[in-house]
Amino acid sequence: MSDEAPVRVMVVDDHPLWRDAVERDLAAAGLDVVAVAATGREALARFGATRPQVLVLDLQIPAPDGVQVTAEVVRRDPEARVLVLSASGEQADVLAAVKAGATGYLVKSASREELLAAVRRVALGEPVFTPGLAGLVLGEFQRDPDQPQLTDRETEVLRMVAKGLSYRQIAERLVLSHRTVQNHVQNTLRKLQMHNRVELTRYAIEQGLDEE
Amino acid sequence: MSSWSSPAATAVEDRLFRALAVLRAILLVNAVVLSALRADEVERPRALAACVLVMVVWTAVATWAYAEPRRRTPPLLVTDLVVAVALLLVTPYVTGQDSASVPGFWVIGALVAWGIRYRTVGGLVAGIVLATADLVRQDIDPSDYGNAFLLLLGGTIVGYVCATLQTMATERDAALHEAAVATERARWARVVHDGVLQVLALVQRRGREIGGEAADLGRLAGEQEIALRSLVRAQDAAPVAGGMVDLAVEVGRLATRPGVTVSAPGYPVELPAAAAHELVAAAGACLDNVRDHVGDDAPAWVLLEAFPDRVELSVRDGGPGIPEGRLAAAAAQGRLGVSGSIRGRLADLGGRAELVTGPDGTEWDLVVPVYGRAHE
Image (cartoon, rainbow over all chains, first blue to last red; front, side, top):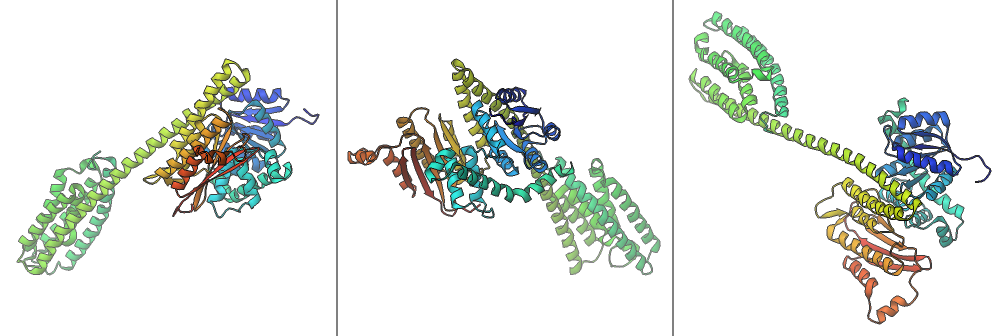
């Protein structure tokens, strides 16, 4: 670890076994786990009290669900980052969470090293994409002609992510810097989230989140 | 459940009888006003007043009685009809002339009640009874025949419509009930699946960290996790048209192979079943090739993309690539092997297969044109 202040993390999961395992791994690696929560309600309350930089969030939690928590957290603090850690990998939920403002997505079977790397990258604002998520996002842009379209380069990069190439490999293939590849991925997320903002507002109103 | 006794049918009946109560009130006002206007012309005004009183009292009684399902018994309906028939039959005595009947349109109340309660047959029976009574009381001329015919027709139609409404309401209720049960079942399945997936993921992760036999357990858990996940995906998939399958689901099954990661859109990609199975089989052949040339657990990635005019399936591995000239050499020796079979399958589908190979892996791009697939 560098001598910078440790990343402040909150772990949200309704399975105690998992919550403890993730918390232990993060703490052992020198991260500062400032809070844990088992439900959406707890998560939002403790988020306000502890102001973590990164939320490691399961989507299947007692209400409000992970998607709603993501939207609310990002609304309250645009600097906060959400890393979705999901077991079931239900496509619709993952996509909804990313549209709501999540910066990264990881399946729960990912190794401890992958989890730690993902938390650190998300804390820096770098998107963490699995190939599966890239495939979903590509699908969204191909489906909806009203979307702000991706540039050819962005599509190319996203397609490579979906085919399992690392940012480093993509940078080499396209003769770009690692940073530029990251920016392309980030832009695709931004376009997806911007298009979603109107829908999200409606969703929040429907779910009664605006009353809080 | 029978459409006679189901709650939905009763609800329809209740609504119709409530509407009939309003209709009866209007018919009563109409009858009272018409009777008042002709009070001077009739032979026995007191008898007419008595008839009007009967109509007022019976309208009130009927409105009260029909409001409750358990009171809608045969005696009530028979009495309803008898009152209407009696009023028709006393017309010559009251008026002393061959003229409009005393109750007039008021008899429709009984007619519609029979139609609602006993449906088509009830409406027909009440129509016949009322029409006969109306014809018996007077010398028949063509316009009277018309009235009788309308009574017959009206009763039957009201009965038929009521029966249809009740059947539809019963069917709708059954469908709603089934949908609710299915939704609840799916919700529970999701909860259970999520719990199982959590545990499998945990076993996998801890197993890998502990190593040794635990690592084997972890690997088994990982295989089950992927199998269950593709099952969940298949169950959650929206139903597709007959003869079609959701290619995203079919491709998703490839993820059960060790080392294989599948990426696909989050919505159904419809393709004719035969074409989808050929395409998935071709992708499977590509993956077999990866296993043979790179290694048993070698990582491979499958990406499905759906465009308005085509679907693209790419299969990539991170292996050393195929040395230049080897495929050509193999073909020259008459060994078309895997690449030939993959190209052949795609050609049969009207598509094409392209192979890109290099030092950081080999990639097959399988493209199948799709005609007339609506852009979603």
